[in-house]
Every structure is written in structure tokens, then in C-alpha cells.
Image (tube, rainbow, N blue to C red):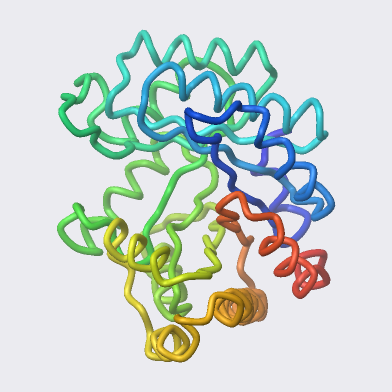
Amino acid sequence: MKTSEFFKQKTVLSLEVFPPKRTAPVDTIYKTLDELKGMTPDFISVTYGAGGSENSRATLEIASSIKHRYGIESVAHIPCLHLTKEDAAEILLQLKAHQIENILALRGDRIPDREPAGDFKYAADLVGFIRDHGDFNIIGACYPEGHQESGGLVRDIHNLKHKVDAGVSQLITQLFFDNGYFYRFRERLDLAGIRVPVEAGIMPVVNKKQIERMVSLCGVRLPKKFTSMMERYGDNPVAMRDAGIAYAVDQIVDLAAHGVDGIHLYTMNNPYIANKIHEAVFRLMAS
């Protein structure tokens, strides 16, 4: 089933997982999935990351298991910057063979010491390619605070409109910690004529190192409420974990009250945290 159909029925809840490190067997992810399936998410997306065909195989195996072993719709991430058209066509053939209908089309990060393949400069290029090579539901990423390389939010919205026009049917945001950015972003989308469902990406932060990495990679801004939480609980791992869960729950409750299309929870493969959040907001997500 195409995940874009879920938005016609309810507030959507989805999760993101990632393949284990290369030093671990791929089937170690199934313990995480066993503990997450009780949440009954509408779909689960599987990241790809850098690393070539080996990572592609892991993404495909996990996405296929989510759909066929767990009976949950799956979304496969495809970053295109380092793919040739031949690579992309082969991945699409494999997805078709495993009956995976949903793709998150991404530009992806640059791999150090490796030149981009040159066939796909932007995610919109991949979106058009996928649209022309099968009947897939194509999901796009978006950035409430603007992509770091976009040159500004106005330019970023313009690029997003191009991506949606190319064939994207739903959007998932990068993580954010101030809902105000999301609400203003949603208003800008409306003004730009972007009329597809938008899921808010929420990541529960449970330690200082995690947030430092996120700020460095994504450039997200931290509101005073969040930094006060970090200052008070950052040196107490259990208290910081619980505070991070509570902060994410507060975000989701507020988003639900403002009519969000859906919540996409970045689980970081941590079922305890994901389940605690789900327990707190289940009725909101079911309405």
C-alpha cells in the first residue's frame, strides 16, 4: 500500500530505523523491530547512509522484512548523489521484486574522498527518475529551518516546490525542537502552493553527545526551554533520558493540537524510548 493513502484516514504515525553497523549482523535489527511492532505504526522507514551496494542490500532486506514478516508498510531510503542511473535502476528493480512501493528520495550526504557520480545532482532529479521507472509512492525530505546548503529559506521552499512538482506525494521534515518553526514553515508551504501531507520529524534527545552531533550535522536551533533541560539534566543519564522523552511528548501533543498530518519518530533504534513516547500519545495518534 502506498503510504500517502494513510493521510486520508487519520493522523499518521511512522518510525525510522537504520541498518546495524557493518560489524554487526543485519539480523540484529529484528530485536528492535520485535519491540517496536507493538506500537502499530502506519509505516517504518529504513535509512541507507553512505557505503554503496552493501548498505543498499541491508536497507532492502530490512524493508522487505518489515513489510512481509511484520505486516507493516515499509519505506526504503535512496540517497542519489553517489548513484549512477544504472545503480538507481537496479535498486528500483529490487524494490519491485520485494513489493516495496514507497521510497524516500534523498540527495544524501557527500562521502569523504569520493566524487559524486554526476547523474543526480539534486533529490528532484531522482524523483523524476523514479516517477519514470515504476509506480512508486515517492516521499521527500523538507527542512522547517531551511537546508544548510540552500542559501536561505525562500530558496529552499522554491527547491521543495520543484521536488513536489517532480512527483513527491508526501513530505517528512528534518528534526526540530521548536514547533514554531514548523508552523511558520507550514504557512510558507501553503503560500507556495505545496499541498501534500507533511509529517513532523521528532527525535527524542537523551544525551548531550547526541544533541551536539545533531546540531553539528543539521544546524537545528535549540530553544531556551531545551537548553535549560540540557543544563539541568545533562550530567544525569537517567534523568536526561526521561526529560528528553517528556520534551518529545510535549512537542507531539502540541503538534497534534495544531492539526499536524503526521508524526515521524526518529527512533535511533531505541525501542524503549519509542514505546514510552507511544504510550503517552497513542490516543492522539489514533484519532
